[in-house]
Amino acid sequence: MAMAARDGDGWVECRCGGKHWGKFGAAGLLLIRDSQVLLQHRAPWVHNGDTWGIPGGARDSHESFIEAALREAHEEVAITGDEIEILTECAEEHGIWSYHTIIARAKNLCDPIAANQESIEVRWVERDDVNSLALHPAFGKNWTQLQRVIQTLP
Image (tube, rainbow, N blue to C red; front, side, top):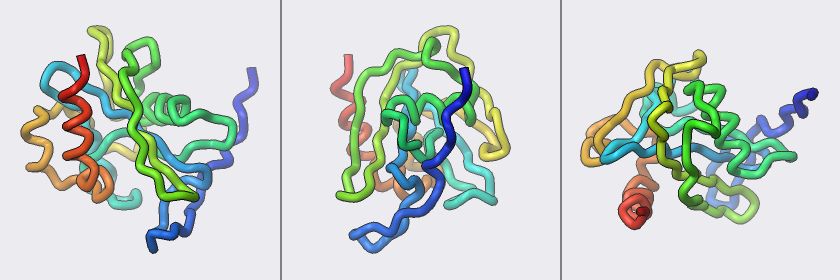
């Protein structure tokens, strides 16, 4: 089966006054395991580089936000949908642009690695220790709300 064209890469000028990556929005995967979350140390050369966040990126026009998050997680940390259980989805809406965080639980066989040049490393981090890292600005802004959502999950 041929792969669909990647048409989502690009910046969007937002009404909030900022620029956001992803012509059709963006998505990321927040992977949890017990009291830990998987974080990606972003390479210095990427936008907001040398910060910690979750694997993610631009959504293509033909993808759902879940499909985009899973594709990006596969590209960046070498996991597949079979290795996780999707629990919920949180959206940050900006009208013309949105970012969807897909929260999923890692299954026992899930073994993420830094799979491409966008990552310096990936690491399981205790949820209480996340704020001690230099966080990607958008992830840092949303972390408190995401923690609240995680705490409500079975």
